[in-house]
Image (cartoon, rainbow, N blue to C red):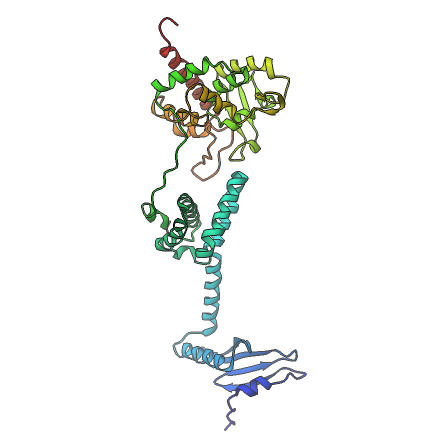
Length: 406
């Protein structure tokens, strides 16, 4: 009968010295300490499964795993064997589950989503999004598997933002999280977006919209007032084009003659000037072409369509159009940027134009059903017709609003 090995003791394990060749110190029940020449000490357990000798199980290194810890692992493995479970296969499954959990953590998925879409955003917007994720979301939810995050967990994170008085930020972070969750659903890592359950959970926040006239009968007098503007010719031309072209005022005042083809009636705006960082085409209606041809006689030899007064190598001042609108009596009633909302509302509600055509013309980041960004020429023919329809409609408004004797 073979002699039974004496169980190990803490002092024996601690004092085991390396030898020229590796050796084993048995603790019984298959558990042993493997001592290697380099000095490392590793816990192993030999076992049989399905009538076969299997490769030893690894329980970690000493002293990170103590003798008592190794014995606990041995007993847990022996229980699995009694239940007909191969402990090595279970180890593999647990390891794979941990890897999957790490790969499906909210932060991992969010950074993947960010990398995919941020190239289509402006640099400032991209920085804002990742900044909000780093500051508020990742510290609380980053390590959680995205498919396990509940609405209450998201709300707790948002409440912390709300508590510090950043209500608008809380709403924007909820929107960002919703986009990440929907990306996770699309890529098979979550079943649903829990932020949809938080629609009424935060205090309402209503950003003050930029003043915009959206009623045709109120818009007509403003258009007539612009026609009567007594300021500089450059500013008057800019004022006349703002409602016609539906562009952001910053884009208009920085327009360059090299971007405009009056023969083709096209203004090609490079991506670096766009909020979305994507090139944009603005079809020019006949009325806009006429204004620009007239203006070219005055500023066409320079770079900018609307040069700064006294500094022709610089674009027109940011304050020029707002000041002109104030002089016309529309302070607090209409802004230059507000003309975009004016056009969007009337084109949709009065002229019955397709919303996607309008959004394209406003240079919003419209995507096709597969999530791809449309290119700058998308629906160009339809947008040309819409822009001419819009310009003709504004002319008609002015004509109908003029006194009969005018």
